[in-house]
Amino acid sequence: MPDPVSTVSTQPSASIALPAASPSVWKAIPTVAIPVVLWFVPLPLEPKAQHAIAISLFMILAWATEVMDHGVTGLIGCYLFWALGVVKFEVAFSGFADDTPWFLMGAILFGTMASKSGLAKRVAYLVTIRVGTSYSRLLLALILSDFLLTILVPSGMARVTIMATVALGLIQAFGLGPGSNIGRAMFLILTYTAGVFDKSIIAGAAAITGRGIIESAGHVEVLWSQWLLAYLPSDIITILVAWRLMLWLYPPEIASLPGGVAYLKDELREMGPWTPLEKKSLALMLIAIVFWSTDFIHHIPSSMIGLGIGLLAVLPFLGILGIDDIRKLNFLQLFFVAAAVSMGKVLSASNGLAVLTNVLFARLEPLLTHPMLSTLAIYWTGFIYHLFLASEISMLGTSTPLLMQFAITHGLNPLKLGMLWVFSAGGKIFVYQSGVLVIGYAYGYFRAKDILRLGLIMSLVDSLLLLVVVRFYWPLIGIK
Image (cartoon, rainbow, N blue to C red; front, side, top):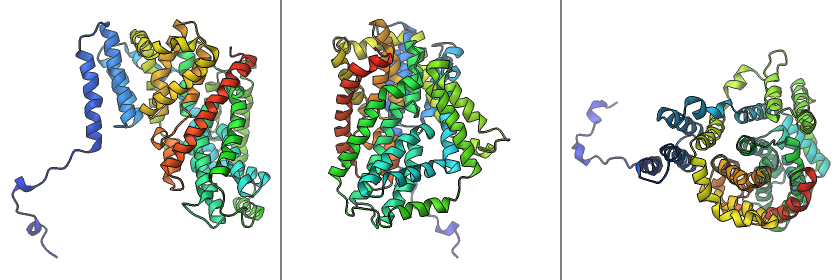
């Protein structure tokens, strides 16, 4: 074996090429430089407002470019609000005392229960057996399972991961693989609709973030049951339209599943009978659903229900979640949501929110006073805004406080505008716009142009549906 020392190159150090700067460095430079310039440039603004906007701009740019984890960015931003004297500590970190991140904590615990126990996969198989085994009915079963699991697994990324195991098994049973129409349609439909359902039900982190800001900045109560009812008609039509669209765009190579129901029954047989863990998980989730669905009677905050039921699952005598399951949770998600709420409160306290509101939404004012045009204006403005601020949580966390301030200032309904703005984040045409799409795309069964085509069609359908639903149905459930 040669001596390691003797193998070291004796070439002059000047000939050694310096490593090129990583892409994250090039992202970090404008992310820091632009806010620093804004901090010092002379503007006709109050110093605290200008400084709050500068730090908020740093947070927005860092979230948009993803130079570091969103939760770390949020913590840095909250620290800068406090350390640089923009606001006091209790305001800079006020989002951590808000119920929004703790609602998300409950949602994460729910997803962990459903995944660990196997309940989510069993529900998917049971729905599929009852719908049918033809290509057409299997597609419908995947969409319906995705919709029903939204309540049990309130995370689009978790649902795509769970449903992907079912889809992969079905595709293999067809004897097909990547590039097939069947595989492409299955992964497209379960991936795209997961992102939509996360907005039409207060389930995913984005909807939870939006709901929290609507309540705190819009000063209105947001009921879980009312939100569910508000989007239920459009959900039903979305399911049917997406299903028929997949059948038209991607005709199957094989019309029906070889083995039929027998394949699905074999999978369930391998899972065995209902385990105590599944039963206990289902019982806790049903209790939460009952309380959420009746919140118009008891008015217990949905966050209190979700976190309370989630924490029950951690109690040792129930034996559902253990301390190891808690250690595996990504708490940076909570920091991110809490920081987004904090940013809105800091901007409000420093008067920076009023400045941004006038800049961002001033041109929308003539459109927002018209019942029909306001729906389209909000949806498509949010759709376009989402193209530039890729993360839907970043989009809602940074812009919803401005929209709420605009609604209050102009005498508009904060609940209506806020719900439309959150839903607009569901329309996507590029994979980078959502972690849900990234996960689905990573399986290799569909291409970027498939998302572009499907996203454009479904966004157009959703916007037209909202014209009817918002105008004629929402007033019937109290959203006027």
